Length: 122
Image 1 (cartoon, rainbow, N blue to C red):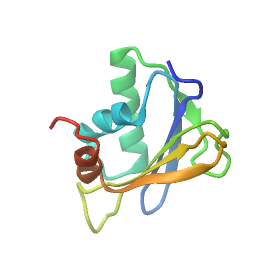
Image 2 (cartoon, rainbow, N blue to C red):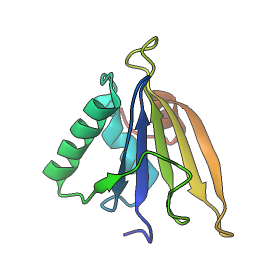
Image 3 (spheres, rainbow, N blue to C red):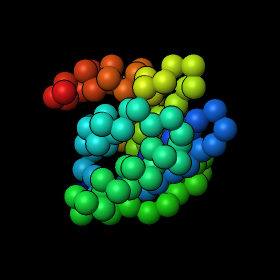
Image 4 (cartoon, one colour):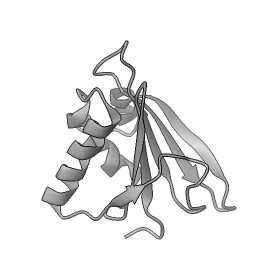
């Protein structure tokens, strides 16, 4: 297992929500679990459905604030934006921490585009 949990942050046009994901080894696992949820149109719905998937698969998680700046220094971040104008097309940004402890944006794009970059199966 990884040294720090991954933080999942989801924003919609009105709200934001977050989870710390201790039961995931890497961000591609998180992206794989998010893909079936792309039809969610609110942050709370997506996070609730994601948490249900975690519970069914035995993965640990805990509630977190939806702010990126307050994230523990060693945690990678998966940030999801749900746009009411483009339903079913979540926009994703992946942030990693380098060996110096600095956070940088690794990828950004649609959920399916990021999955393609990471060579995840459909």
